[in-house]
Image (cartoon, rainbow over all chains, first blue to last red; front, side, top):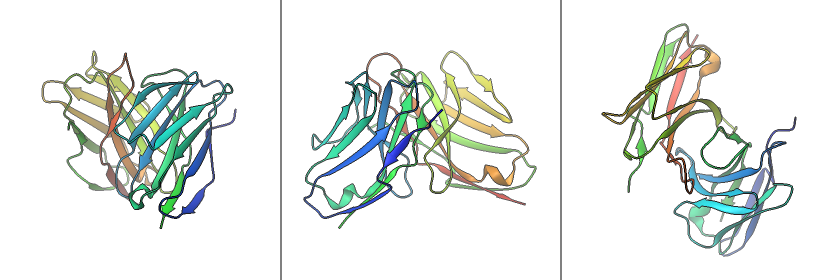
Length: 113
Length: 113
């Protein structure tokens, strides 16, 4: 059984650029959630995708968008990057939508300069 | 806005002691609570969850207590081991409808051998 994987591991971007982060869910999981974790803080929920549809969204601006594919893998896209977007971006998959047991990936460390 | 918070940012214990990590939540409508463990350089790991129709739930060496009257959650770790050293987060959410979890800031548990 393969766990949740994320790519890339680290990324450096310039303010104003766009970035795409990727996540492969654990085998058999149909739900993916994305979180932003600033240094020294708890994860902040961005959104959740269940069977390719958004199933909840946190307090993030529209420049944060996502996709889920038929194989349940997912992408997080961030446009017009700002310095405050620098953070660890975590992806978590679960067997079903909602708040059930989630399995997190190791995250992508994004630095915006 | 409403948020989940932790009373103690850092907790230091001796190996073999019992540890108690506390969490206050603000949303009285939340009905599902989860504790996560996050080791350095890794994504959060599910430890234990509890629903609002329960006040206690036990796992292997861990117990979660829920006091809805005062909106308080605690995680008890028995016979704490050096491998338990990590940051612990509580999270709250409403099941049903859109999924929008709220994580606390975290408590750093340091276990001294």
